[in-house]
Image (tube, rainbow, N blue to C red; front, side, top):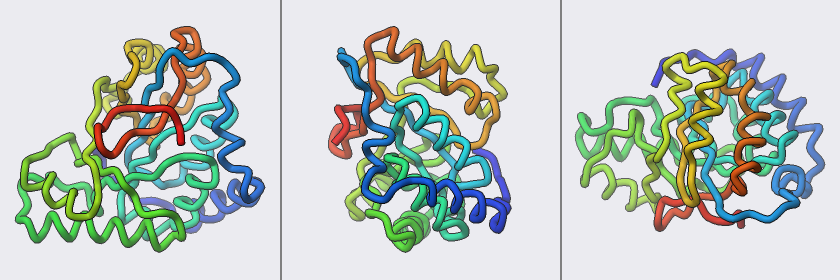
Length: 228
């Protein structure tokens, strides 16, 4: 929702340190284990990465046993492929959030195609699996946009709960938003707000208190499901 110019050299250098600290092949084990019963699964989603705050976010998620779907902007992914690789190495899933974050429903079909296809290529070029999920910027969608997304094998994902972190929500407000999640639902969060990063431990505790675990998102239904 906001324009941000990533500090490429800084982001790549810092993210590389995080990626180097993760043992290859053990990434899923690092983030996935939630050694308790789950009465349901919810989707934690973070828009607008990767950027200079991504390493701290990944560490916070891992430290608290959470997995999430990172809806990356293609331009940022192209500038910081190491950041994309680190997301997957940390056990996260990666989705497509357009290349330049425009109001997609105001674009021609050809422009929609370019936004989505360029992002698919940018993410795949980081050496990770091509996304299966697409989140339209601002949550603005249309039949034409969904058709273009489907042509790339992408399922559209919106959200049930908006944390309002993009709008200056406090840590308490972000945590309270996570407390409204029920089985299968998805919350909108962002990669960059400091309050979101600070809220991660309490989000984990809130979900645990409600018997919920962080899950994957089905490209078919757009709902949160057990991790795979």
